[in-house]
Image (tube, rainbow, N blue to C red; front, side):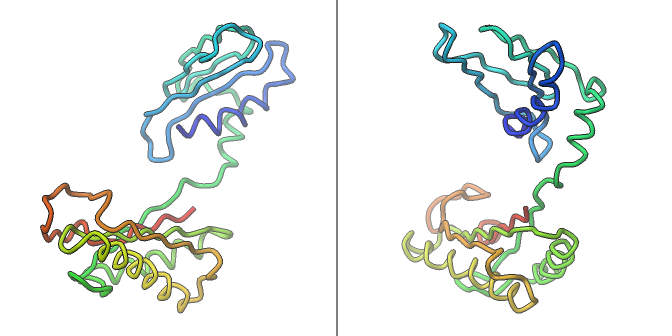
Length: 199
């Protein structure tokens, strides 16, 4: 949950108050509220700690039984709002699709390179993760290599556009993590893709 990392930062903003430190959980970067955070204090008898979940909950971290309280987005304190406002934007995601058994982009995906270029240039210091995938046609080992080649192909094109090579990582995952579940040896254009994450 995004709040797990962000909440610790928010807790620091209220350490000076008389109420003691507190933690605020927010939505995930994609706007969902799945996930939970365990608060563990070695001085307490509960080895598993207390589980906190739910967007826009505030929890005081004093004592061995922290109690979360829903405050809603409107219930954030001014210093919490200021901290959230200073955070970098959430990651942007781009998906490009491929012609079967090639590293050639499918029609309609070429424009994504330009959109990615504009987004990256408007986000100083960004890093890019490129993950390649295939459909289930062919052997798994072959597809793993092909997915890496697809990721590397997109990286090469971005580097030609002036993207810094050290800001880009690539990974091939073959026919794992299908977007559309299909049987083996099934051609599917939605699974032949690279997913690009800009952070």
